Image 1 (cartoon, helix red, strand yellow):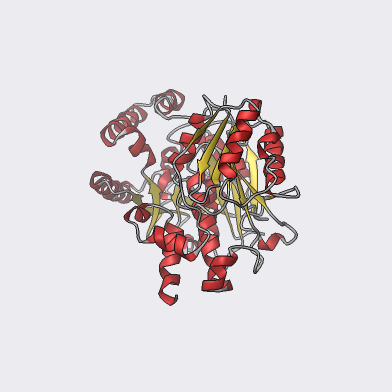
Image 2: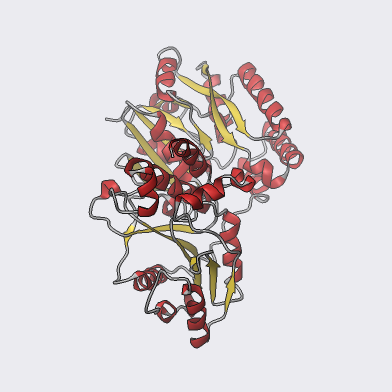
Length: 450
C-alpha cells in the first residue's frame, strides 16, 4: 500500500512533467502514488515524457472539484495531498506532512509565488496572514488530510470553483482544525502575468465577494474561465526531438575527447533538459525519437520512440510519416545540439508553416538545426540527399524543395553545440544568461577543469 497519494487535477497543463519530477525529487524514501485526474481528453497526458509505475491517470468530468473527488476515490493511500499542477512542494514535504497529521486531521503549507513582481510578493504575504487567521487555506496551499477526514464532510465537494474553500469551511464547521506547516509550497504567477496584476486581483476579489453572497459556483466558474485562454484543439502541432541514448561513448565524441565520459554525459543531459523546458512551454506535443532504445534505463525520456532508417535522411522522413499518422498537422523536427533555442523560435516556425510548406532553421555549419513541414504537403523526397554532414546540406535541401514545388521559409541562423569551442563561445555571450539554464550551470562547473 502507498504511504501517500498525490491528487493533481489537470486541464490543458503545459508543464505537468515538471510537477511530476518535483514530486519524485521531494518524496525520496516514501512510497508515493500520483494520480492525474484529467478533464482534457488526454492532452496533458501526452506531455508526460517519463512514465513511472506509481503514476495513475484517470479521466473525469470537467471542474476541479469533480476531478479532485474522482482522484480521492481512486487513491490507494489513506493520506492525501491535493496539488495544483503549477505548485511545487518543498524538500522533505512528506516528512513534515506526516508530522502534522500526528497532531491534526488536516493541514496546508504556506504559499510563495514564483515571481519578480513586488506587488505579488506582498499579496502572497497578505494571503498567508489571512489564511493563518481564518484557518481556511486556498487550494494553492496544497491541502493534505486523511481519507476519513474527507468522508466526514460527505466527500470532496464536486463543484467547479471555490471547491477548496468549501472543503475547508466544511471541516471548520465540524470542528476539524487545520494545521499550517511553516514551509512554503511555491506556485506560478502565470495567471497574473497573462491577465495583469490588477485585473486578476479585482477579478478574484469580485468572485470571492459573490461566493460569500451564495452565488452558485457554476455561475462563478463561467466568469472565472471566460478570461482564461484554453488550448486550441482545432490544430494539432508536434515537435520531434532526435537524440541519442545515454550509453557511454554514444554521443558528442568531439566534446568527450576534451572533457571525458562523465562530464559529456552531464552536459548532454543538460542539453535535453533545456530542450524539454522550452518545448513544454509551447502548445505542441513533444515527441522524442532516440537512436537506440535497447536499454530503457539509458533513455532520458522513457517514452521515446526508436528512429528507423539507413541514414539520417531516411530516419527523419520515417519520423515525419509516423507523426503524421498520429494526426498531427504541423510538425517540427530538431536535434539535441541547440539547447539555447527559446520557445519563441518554435512558435515562429509554426507561424511560418501557415503560409509555407517547409521551414528550415539554418545552422552556421551549412546544415539545419530545425526542419518543419505541414502534414498535407509532406514528401519524403526533401530528405533524399545522397550525402549528409557537409556544408551544403541546407542549400541542397532547398534545391529539393524547388524540385518538388514546395515553398519554404528560413528562421534565424543558430550554432549547433558540436565542440567545446561552440559551447564556450555561447557561454561567454551576454545573451546566454537568459538561455538554457541547465546547460549554462553545468558548463560553468565543467569549464573550470579544462
